[in-house]
Structure formats: C-alpha cells, structure tokens
Image (cartoon, rainbow, N blue to C red; front, side):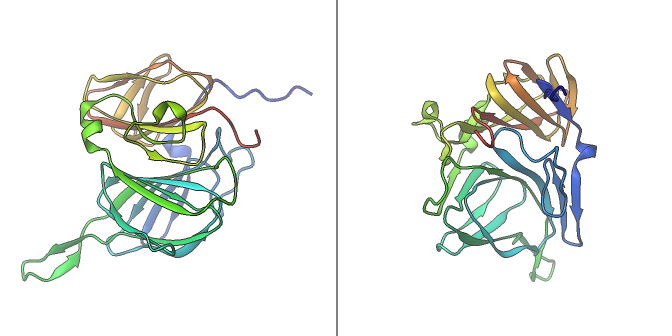
Length: 258
C-alpha cells in the first residue's frame, strides 16, 4: 500500500475550519481541538493549535490547567486580561506578544475586560476581543512554568516579517519572546496594500491570514481565516492586495514525533 504524501503547499480555507460557538465565544480551529477530533488534522510540524477566538465583552475563559505546552497569544482587536497561578498578570493588546510556558503545570484565566463610560459616566463592558492562540510542543517536558510578554509595535511598523516568538538561535538578540523550542519561530507581518514579504524556507511552515487578503505566489488569493501548510518548501512571495493585511507565519524545523 502506498503511503499518502503530504502536498508541499496545502491550502486550507477559512470555511472548512472546525468551530465552537457558545453565547460568549466564537472559536475557529485550524486543527483538532476539544470535542472536535479529526485524526488527519492534528498538527503541522510542532504547531498543535491555531485557534481564532472572539470573546464577548466581560466574558472569557475561567481558570483552567495546562501542562507541557508553549502557548503564544496574539491579539488582533480589543484587549485580553491574563492571570495565572504563578502570580503573573497582564493585559494583552494588538502589538504585544505573550507567551506562557505551561511546563510542569499551570492554571490561568483569560478574560475580555474591556470597559467604556456610558453617557451617565457609568462604566460598562464594551467591545469584543479577537485573538489567535497558538500551541507549540516544547523541546522537553517538565520545565518550570513561565510567562513573558513583549511590545513589538515599533518593529511591526517598520514592515517585513517580524520574529515575535522564537527559540531559534538566529533570533537571539532580536525583540522576540523566547519559547522552549529551538526549532520553531513565529513571525508577524502587517502589510499595507501592495507590500510583499518572502516566506522563509523550512521543513514545515504554517501561514495564517489573520486579517485582510494576500496573494501567494503560485497559489493565488488567500482571504482572512485561510491558512497554508508548507512541507519542505518556502521562499514564495506573499503580497497584500488592495487592503491592509496581517499574517502569522510559523517556521518549524521539526515535527511532532521527531
């Protein structure tokens, strides 16, 4: 029997994503997650989760556990309040990268705590928050839990693919939060209409269009929520269309299981 071969450029459209929808949460899953399980869609490289979450004002994820996972959160709109059992707390907003290393075990909560004043000057919860949460397998299990956040807005304004989370040696000294995986890095690009970037070459690459639309060389137009999984390729040109775009790119030099 011939084994199935993963296509080197595998386009996954936004509309085929698995979804979780409750009264306060709209979540789209690029990979199997929670009650949604597809044995043929569990990960790419070491990326196990790429969730596109929108949380209603005043709502969020109550305290829950994690273990042995590098969790990177990137906010697109609004703000998200993080608190955990190690005493870390912070507000995550667009342009600020956050990483939580679950390691031996950690409890945390994530809430949309946005407020505004009404006409009578009474504060009320206001806007939804939209964020992408990504889970990457660490190099080793049982590390000490940790937390880091870093403002990268200035780097994003300069353009290009900006490393915002990395464990790779080549990014040491850059403005990037550290993750416990020496073969993985997350890049973000905010692109004006007509801007282009070149994707890195890597054994495994994951591209997610967070906002706007782009043209991918040799593959065509990609819209918000679309993703592409690259295997043993890279170097393609990515160009924003007639509207601004924001893309997230994982470069990975290993995969789940080796």
